[in-house]
Amino acid sequence: MLKIAIPNKGRLSEKIYDLLNKAGLNLDSKDERELSVTTSDGKFSVIFVRTQDIPRFLDAKAADIGFTGLDIVEEEGVEVDVVKQFSFGKCDMVVAVKEKDSYQTSQDLPEHFNIATSFPNIAKRHFEKIGKTVNIIEISGAVEITPSLGLSDVVVDITSTGTTLKQNGLRIIDKILSSSTVLIARKNLSEEKTKKLDSFLVAINSVLDAREKKYLMAHVPKNNLDKIKEILPGLSSPTLTTLYGDNENVVIHVVINKNEVFESIEKLKTLGGKGILILSVDQMVR
Image 1 (tube, one colour):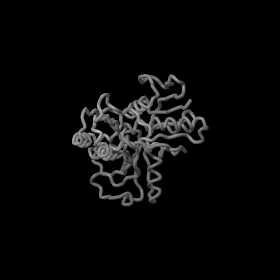
Image 2 (cartoon, helix red, strand yellow):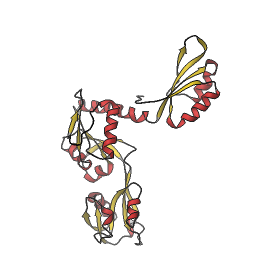
Image 3 (cartoon, rainbow, N blue to C red):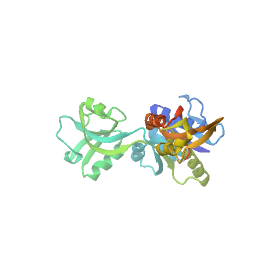
Image 4 (cartoon, helix red, strand yellow):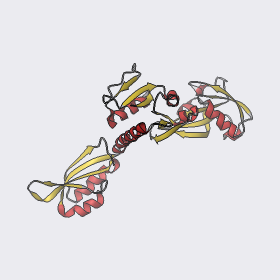
């Protein structure tokens, strides 16, 4: 059984749980009181834990793979393999100071100052690298309010848009790292679990690839097939099926990019395309 750790709550938890279901794990509706759930075929077990704890669960062999943020992986410093990076959960780890301060980069900061952060290890490494001596004040939340309360001079925090920092009178002077959701695996998985992970990745990728595609069907004239193939090449070549009692037209089946639907329909209509259908694609294995 492959044990998968995912965040126990929040939008990221819901997004990942939905992704797992669409990938074919067929999990029951999530109950916030549940700590784990096993798929009906017994191949996968999903455990729900705090996002921050997921790397440590892998390190302790309580889970085999897990979904968390790259920033969490960097902060915990646990040796794991990052097997996939996703396009959601994006944020930046930044250094911010009071708007009125004159500092432009981390190098401009004085030799000694107080930093408030939820990421003490990342902050320490960053400032040690540039030769600054800092007093780190570890805060579990609401880091951005600490300068106005006189608790810190600088904050190191994650942000998606920078809006919350601005609302609290702070200005970004450096970016330490860019983060997004990642799938991590513990070191030294068995051969059997490595095979299951490979199959799991195929299923996950099939869902993610499908989100950017649409399935197009249409009746088209045979004499325009070469031109149609030029504008709608599909994954390799369009699929054709015959129409009963019609020797002049065929049905074309093709996968197209989601952002090319309108353009494809217009081009197809100019080549005699009729009865055009656009369908959603749930999964797509290349």
